[in-house]
Image 1 (cartoon, rainbow, N blue to C red):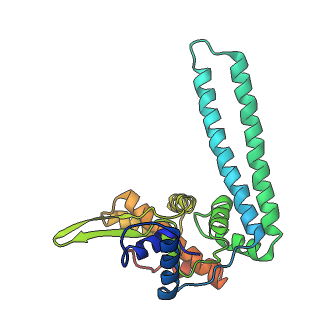
Image 2: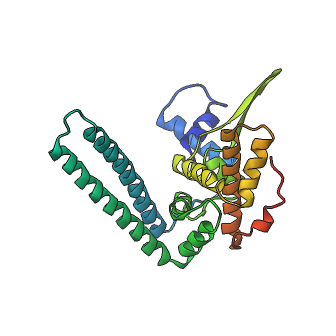
Length: 251
Protein backbone atom coordinates (compact mmCIF):
# COMPACT_ATOMS: atom_id res chain seq x y z
CA UNK A 1 0.00 0.00 0.00
CA UNK A 2 1.39 3.39 -1.03
CA UNK A 3 0.22 6.90 -0.28
CA UNK A 4 -1.27 8.21 -3.59
CA UNK A 5 0.49 11.53 -3.05
CA UNK A 6 3.83 9.74 -3.38
CA UNK A 7 2.98 8.14 -6.71
CA UNK A 8 1.60 11.46 -7.91
CA UNK A 9 4.77 13.36 -7.06
CA UNK A 10 6.83 10.54 -8.55
CA UNK A 11 4.91 10.81 -11.81
CA UNK A 12 5.41 14.56 -12.06
CA UNK A 13 9.17 14.04 -12.35
CA UNK A 14 9.03 12.30 -15.71
CA UNK A 15 5.78 13.18 -17.48
CA UNK A 16 3.76 16.24 -18.38
CA UNK A 17 0.80 17.33 -16.32
CA UNK A 18 -2.35 15.41 -17.07
CA UNK A 19 -4.51 12.71 -15.58
CA UNK A 20 -6.03 9.73 -17.34
CA UNK A 21 -6.42 6.10 -16.32
CA UNK A 22 -3.60 5.13 -18.67
CA UNK A 23 -1.24 7.77 -17.24
CA UNK A 24 -2.07 6.77 -13.67
CA UNK A 25 -1.53 3.09 -14.44
CA UNK A 26 1.87 3.82 -16.00
CA UNK A 27 2.86 6.00 -13.03
CA UNK A 28 1.95 3.33 -10.49
CA UNK A 29 3.76 0.66 -12.49
CA UNK A 30 6.92 2.79 -12.78
CA UNK A 31 6.80 3.55 -9.07
CA UNK A 32 6.48 -0.13 -8.21
CA UNK A 33 9.51 -1.01 -10.33
CA UNK A 34 11.69 1.90 -9.19
CA UNK A 35 10.99 2.21 -5.47
CA UNK A 36 11.59 -0.38 -2.73
CA UNK A 37 8.37 -1.48 -1.06
CA UNK A 38 7.23 -3.91 1.62
CA UNK A 39 4.15 -6.12 1.45
CA UNK A 40 1.37 -4.76 3.60
CA UNK A 41 -0.19 -7.02 6.19
CA UNK A 42 -3.44 -5.90 7.82
CA UNK A 43 -3.52 -5.70 11.62
CA UNK A 44 -5.41 -8.40 13.43
CA UNK A 45 -9.19 -7.84 13.49
CA UNK A 46 -9.32 -7.49 17.29
CA UNK A 47 -6.88 -4.57 17.16
CA UNK A 48 -9.08 -2.88 14.56
CA UNK A 49 -12.15 -3.39 16.76
CA UNK A 50 -10.34 -2.00 19.78
CA UNK A 51 -9.44 1.12 17.81
CA UNK A 52 -13.13 1.64 17.06
CA UNK A 53 -13.98 1.26 20.76
CA UNK A 54 -11.41 3.87 21.82
CA UNK A 55 -12.37 6.27 19.05
CA UNK A 56 -15.99 6.06 20.16
CA UNK A 57 -14.82 6.66 23.72
CA UNK A 58 -12.97 9.79 22.59
CA UNK A 59 -16.04 11.03 20.72
CA UNK A 60 -18.23 10.40 23.76
CA UNK A 61 -15.79 12.27 26.01
CA UNK A 62 -15.99 15.19 23.57
CA UNK A 63 -19.80 15.18 23.76
CA UNK A 64 -19.60 14.93 27.55
CA UNK A 65 -17.39 18.01 27.70
CA UNK A 66 -19.77 19.89 25.43
CA UNK A 67 -22.78 18.92 27.54
CA UNK A 68 -21.02 20.03 30.74
CA UNK A 69 -20.33 23.39 29.13
CA UNK A 70 -23.99 23.66 28.18
CA UNK A 71 -24.99 22.87 31.75
CA UNK A 72 -22.64 25.53 33.07
CA UNK A 73 -24.15 28.08 30.69
CA UNK A 74 -27.73 27.01 31.51
CA UNK A 75 -27.23 27.26 35.26
CA UNK A 76 -25.75 30.76 34.92
CA UNK A 77 -28.66 32.18 32.96
CA UNK A 78 -30.52 35.07 34.51
CA UNK A 79 -33.57 32.80 34.78
CA UNK A 80 -32.40 29.14 34.50
CA UNK A 81 -34.91 26.69 33.07
CA UNK A 82 -35.20 23.81 35.53
CA UNK A 83 -36.37 21.44 32.80
CA UNK A 84 -33.30 22.15 30.62
CA UNK A 85 -30.93 21.86 33.58
CA UNK A 86 -32.43 18.50 34.56
CA UNK A 87 -32.27 17.25 30.97
CA UNK A 88 -28.61 18.21 30.66
CA UNK A 89 -27.79 16.48 33.93
CA UNK A 90 -29.45 13.30 32.67
CA UNK A 91 -27.41 13.50 29.48
CA UNK A 92 -24.20 13.94 31.50
CA UNK A 93 -25.00 10.93 33.66
CA UNK A 94 -25.73 8.82 30.56
CA UNK A 95 -22.54 9.91 28.79
CA UNK A 96 -20.43 9.23 31.87
CA UNK A 97 -21.87 5.70 32.05
CA UNK A 98 -21.12 5.20 28.36
CA UNK A 99 -17.50 6.30 28.80
CA UNK A 100 -17.11 3.85 31.68
CA UNK A 101 -18.72 1.04 29.63
CA UNK A 102 -16.44 1.67 26.66
CA UNK A 103 -13.31 1.63 28.84
CA UNK A 104 -14.46 -1.58 30.53
CA UNK A 105 -15.16 -3.16 27.12
CA UNK A 106 -11.72 -2.17 25.87
CA UNK A 107 -9.96 -3.58 28.94
CA UNK A 108 -11.90 -6.85 28.71
CA UNK A 109 -11.11 -7.33 25.03
CA UNK A 110 -7.44 -6.33 25.17
CA UNK A 111 -6.74 -8.69 28.05
CA UNK A 112 -8.36 -11.52 26.09
CA UNK A 113 -5.46 -11.36 23.63
CA UNK A 114 -2.04 -12.43 24.98
CA UNK A 115 -0.10 -10.30 22.46
CA UNK A 116 -2.24 -7.17 22.81
CA UNK A 117 -2.49 -7.56 26.57
CA UNK A 118 1.29 -7.81 26.76
CA UNK A 119 1.73 -4.61 24.76
CA UNK A 120 -0.85 -2.80 26.89
CA UNK A 121 0.92 -3.87 30.08
CA UNK A 122 4.36 -2.79 28.79
CA UNK A 123 3.08 0.61 27.71
CA UNK A 124 1.23 1.33 30.96
CA UNK A 125 4.48 0.82 32.90
CA UNK A 126 6.05 3.82 31.14
CA UNK A 127 5.78 7.07 33.17
CA UNK A 128 3.15 9.40 31.76
CA UNK A 129 1.28 6.64 29.92
CA UNK A 130 -2.01 5.56 31.42
CA UNK A 131 -4.51 2.95 30.17
CA UNK A 132 -6.19 5.21 27.59
CA UNK A 133 -2.95 6.61 26.16
CA UNK A 134 -1.48 3.10 26.07
CA UNK A 135 -4.56 1.92 24.22
CA UNK A 136 -4.28 4.76 21.73
CA UNK A 137 -0.63 3.94 21.02
CA UNK A 138 -1.50 0.26 20.63
CA UNK A 139 -4.55 0.61 18.40
CA UNK A 140 -3.46 3.55 16.23
CA UNK A 141 -0.25 1.69 15.30
CA UNK A 142 -1.90 -1.71 14.85
CA UNK A 143 0.11 -3.05 17.78
CA UNK A 144 3.23 -1.43 16.22
CA UNK A 145 2.83 -3.92 13.38
CA UNK A 146 4.06 -1.78 10.47
CA UNK A 147 6.41 0.47 12.46
CA UNK A 148 10.06 -0.25 11.70
CA UNK A 149 11.83 2.14 14.07
CA UNK A 150 11.31 4.71 16.79
CA UNK A 151 12.08 7.44 14.26
CA UNK A 152 9.36 6.14 11.96
CA UNK A 153 6.89 6.13 14.85
CA UNK A 154 7.75 9.77 15.60
CA UNK A 155 7.23 10.65 11.93
CA UNK A 156 3.92 8.75 11.84
CA UNK A 157 2.75 10.82 14.80
CA UNK A 158 3.66 13.99 12.89
CA UNK A 159 6.16 15.04 15.55
CA UNK A 160 9.34 14.93 13.47
CA UNK A 161 11.07 18.33 13.23
CA UNK A 162 10.90 19.82 9.73
CA UNK A 163 13.94 21.87 8.64
CA UNK A 164 13.38 25.09 6.69
CA UNK A 165 16.75 26.20 5.35
CA UNK A 166 17.83 27.70 2.02
CA UNK A 167 21.03 29.64 1.45
CA UNK A 168 21.53 32.07 4.31
CA UNK A 169 17.94 31.57 5.52
CA UNK A 170 17.61 29.17 8.42
CA UNK A 171 14.16 29.35 10.02
CA UNK A 172 13.19 27.66 13.30
CA UNK A 173 12.06 24.06 12.97
CA UNK A 174 8.49 23.01 13.61
CA UNK A 175 6.93 19.58 13.84
CA UNK A 176 5.49 18.36 10.56
CA UNK A 177 1.98 17.49 11.86
CA UNK A 178 1.78 15.25 8.77
CA UNK A 179 0.73 12.15 10.63
CA UNK A 180 -1.83 10.56 12.89
CA UNK A 181 -3.37 13.33 15.03
CA UNK A 182 -4.67 10.91 17.67
CA UNK A 183 -1.21 9.45 18.13
CA UNK A 184 0.30 12.94 18.29
CA UNK A 185 -2.18 14.08 20.93
CA UNK A 186 -1.61 10.94 23.00
CA UNK A 187 2.17 11.43 22.93
CA UNK A 188 1.82 15.08 23.95
CA UNK A 189 -0.52 14.24 26.84
CA UNK A 190 1.90 11.52 27.95
CA UNK A 191 4.68 14.11 27.99
CA UNK A 192 2.61 16.51 30.09
CA UNK A 193 1.85 13.74 32.58
CA UNK A 194 5.47 12.57 32.66
CA UNK A 195 6.68 16.02 33.74
CA UNK A 196 4.71 15.57 36.97
CA UNK A 197 6.51 12.35 37.90
CA UNK A 198 9.90 11.71 39.48
CA UNK A 199 11.09 9.76 36.43
CA UNK A 200 14.06 10.47 34.13
CA UNK A 201 11.50 11.89 31.69
CA UNK A 202 10.79 14.74 34.12
CA UNK A 203 14.53 15.29 34.59
CA UNK A 204 14.97 15.40 30.80
CA UNK A 205 12.20 18.01 30.51
CA UNK A 206 13.55 20.18 33.33
CA UNK A 207 17.02 20.06 31.82
CA UNK A 208 15.73 21.32 28.49
CA UNK A 209 13.79 24.14 30.13
CA UNK A 210 16.81 25.00 32.26
CA UNK A 211 18.89 25.23 29.07
CA UNK A 212 16.53 27.89 27.73
CA UNK A 213 14.14 25.82 25.65
CA UNK A 214 10.53 27.07 25.60
CA UNK A 215 8.24 24.81 27.61
CA UNK A 216 6.22 23.72 24.59
CA UNK A 217 9.40 22.86 22.65
CA UNK A 218 10.61 20.84 25.64
CA UNK A 219 7.27 19.02 25.84
CA UNK A 220 7.41 18.09 22.16
CA UNK A 221 10.98 16.82 22.58
CA UNK A 222 9.85 14.76 25.56
CA UNK A 223 6.88 13.40 23.58
CA UNK A 224 9.29 12.23 20.86
CA UNK A 225 11.47 10.59 23.49
CA UNK A 226 8.50 8.79 25.03
CA UNK A 227 7.43 7.46 21.61
CA UNK A 228 10.95 6.21 20.92
CA UNK A 229 11.15 4.51 24.31
CA UNK A 230 7.69 3.00 23.85
CA UNK A 231 8.69 1.51 20.51
CA UNK A 232 11.91 0.04 21.93
CA UNK A 233 10.10 -1.48 24.89
CA UNK A 234 7.33 -3.05 22.82
CA UNK A 235 9.72 -4.41 20.21
CA UNK A 236 12.14 -5.86 22.76
CA UNK A 237 9.43 -7.05 25.16
CA UNK A 238 11.58 -5.69 28.01
CA UNK A 239 9.68 -3.77 30.72
CA UNK A 240 10.47 -0.11 31.34
CA UNK A 241 13.67 0.44 33.33
CA UNK A 242 14.37 4.01 34.52
CA UNK A 243 18.09 3.24 34.81
CA UNK A 244 18.29 3.05 31.01
CA UNK A 245 17.21 6.70 30.76
CA UNK A 246 18.71 8.32 33.83
CA UNK A 247 21.97 9.20 32.05
CA UNK A 248 20.57 9.95 28.61
CA UNK A 249 21.71 13.33 27.22
CA UNK A 250 19.18 16.07 26.54
CA UNK A 251 18.81 16.91 22.86
